[in-house]
Figure (cartoon, rainbow, N blue to C red):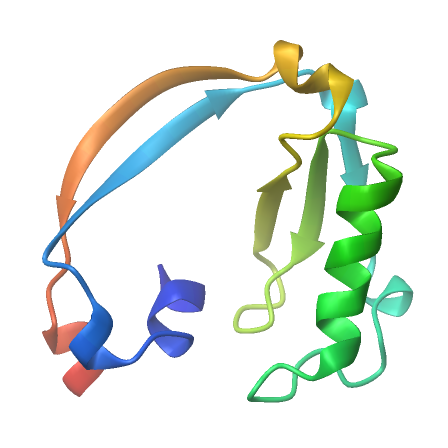
Length: 108
């Protein structure tokens, strides 16, 4: 939620969102260490090198899921799903629940 909050303009936030829970094989997840990322990956706005990094992940399609460090909370991770990967068949949606974004998170 924090990654979303810092990367979106308050006027573009829909009030109704959803959380989706996925199930996947651990062998389908590529762990990216901070040292593997471009040196400027935490800059805001995101530098072109981060887009290039993500594009390589999609086009080379080595794994269906990328586990990447959060730029906000070092102990947290984001999971990026590659729908182009053949292993996407191993990724299942387990649950979808409604979420109403409280704009106080953005305005504080």
